[in-house]
Image 1: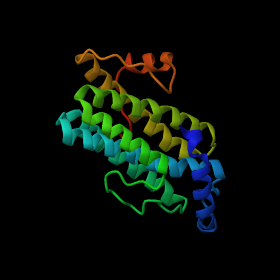
Image 2: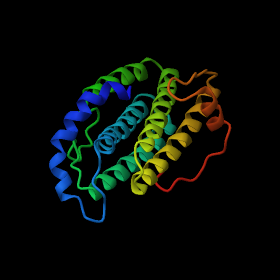
Image 3: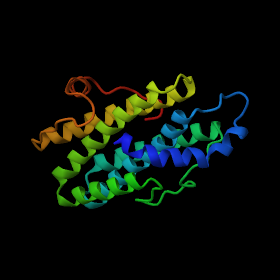
Length: 203
C-alpha cells in the first residue's frame, strides 16, 4: 500500500521543504524518505484510532475503545517527533474522525468502516488487518533511517501494534475466526501471536 502513496508523499515533502531551515541544530535535517514516512505514519496512526473508535461506537466491544486510546498515544508520539524536527502537521492537529489529507488513507478508511458495519466478526478482522499493515510499514520506515530518535519512536509504535495484534487475535479466537496475514509474513505473524504481551513506553 505504501508504494501507492509515493506520489502524494513527494508532494507533501516539497510543500514541507521550507521546514528544514527551521530544524533545530541539535537534530539532523530529514531526508525525503524520512520526511515522507513521518508524514504518512502520522495519518496511518490516526486511521487506526478512527477505525477502532468507530468500531466501538458500532459494536460496543471494549477492546476497540482500549486500543483506540492507545492509538491516541501513538498519534501524540508521532506529533512530538514531528515537532522536534519542525515538521508541520498536515492535519493541523485535527481529531475529526475520518479526516485525512492522504486520499489513499481516506479511501482505505471508508472501505474499513464499511466492513466494520457488516458485523463484529468483520470488525475484528479489520483490526488484525490494520495492525498487520502498520507493522510492515513501520519496519520499512525504520529501514530507511539511521536517526535514533525516529527509530526509537517507530520501535515503540511497532511494539504497540504487536500488542494490539495479540488482543485482536484473542478476540478472533473466541469467535473462531481465521486470519491470514496480508502484509507481514506468516512466520512473523505466528511469532507475534504466540509470544507474550510486552510493555511499550508509548503504548
